[in-house]
Image (tube, rainbow, N blue to C red; front, top):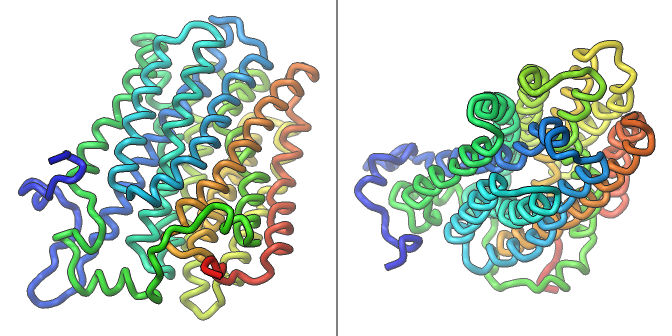
Amino acid sequence: MSPLNAPPSPAASVATLGTSPGADGRMSRYRWTVCALLFFATTINYIDRQVLGILAPVLSDELGWSEVEYGAIVSWFTFAYGLGFLVVGRLLDRVGVRRGFATAIVAWSVAAMAHALARGAAGFSIARAALGLGESGNFPGAIKATAEWFPRKERALATGIFNAGSNVGAIAAPLLVPWITLRWGWQMAFIVTGALGFVWLAFWLVLYREPEEHPRVSPAELAHIRSDPAESTTSIPWLRLLRHRQTWAFFLGKLMTDPVWWFYLFWLPKYLDSRWDVHLAGLAAPLVVIYLVADVGSVGGGWVSSALIKRGWSVNAGRKTAMLIAALLIVPTMFAPMAGSMWAAVAIVSVAAAAHQWWSANLFTLASDTFPRRAVASVVGIGGFAGAMGGFAFQRATGYVLQATNSNYSIIFTVCGLAYVAALAVIHLLVPRLEPADVDA
């Protein structure tokens, strides 16, 4: 029997973090154990993708990369990431989360470690493309798992919690990578962080099953998870999904705002180095502050919209109000290059990063708000493709703009500041009310 399909071992009962279903009929809370697994997967996902950004000033000096060359290297990650979204989202809807997620994390962990063997811009471009292809499985898998394990009223909070792993990963990376690099060299930074995925894989194979098959889920919890109206399990073709305005609202929302987050991940260390002369050993403090604040935004954004809905607001009003708050908080980002000190710039970017995560938690939830569970991973995959392709173009453009302006970041930060207000306007025009798409019509 394949280890992916093996029944839970006795160790699973000991290792599980959930509450055991008791004989008194009380509801277990195992769904939050699943949320924790998704949180740690997302943490590792972001550690692996951010290693190159942290090492960018070191590698640019050592290997002689120009701004354009660096922009091209990181753009291949987003290009492959986007293509992977189209394939992985569909694959997850067909083979299931357990097997699909396990395959994805093995692929991206091997690719992350392969960076240590790269030499020159071409080698790093290949490694980045392989990493992007593997990492594309994380968010479609996590969103689909959330849709399978949580009723609609809890999904934004659960999404916010697992999405906070991106910020924890972004915090852990600047703490781990410089320390490893200064002691054992940059190659070991890729090897050590890449190996973390295999540790997570062991827990995933032991702890994860579908709710109906899991021995740690009580009947009361299963009823709670399945409290939304019953849905068909018939597969939905992509072309049918593309007929709906809800798909295009999610597509354009990701296209217009995901590139900003890619910019933060891959270019902030270079910005701090070029503008404020912050080198490898000094990157930890500003980056930890930025992503620690962002972590608050991720959970807070999901909590706000969920709280509004629980108080009687419609899903439409709750989600869009939360997204509007985030969009307005991001506008001052355009003033970051004019800040009078490094910490003033860090404060501006920290608020923007938190607001992006606030926005992202609610944008992801739009997919599960407007589509049935059997289509969620496909829709997220389509939107992820759009965001990654936007990121590909934005990384390339950033390299050319910075090289042409002698590393002047003003134009880039202005685009970042205005992207979310524009995206929310587009989403509202396409979907004035968040209503379920009639995918069976």
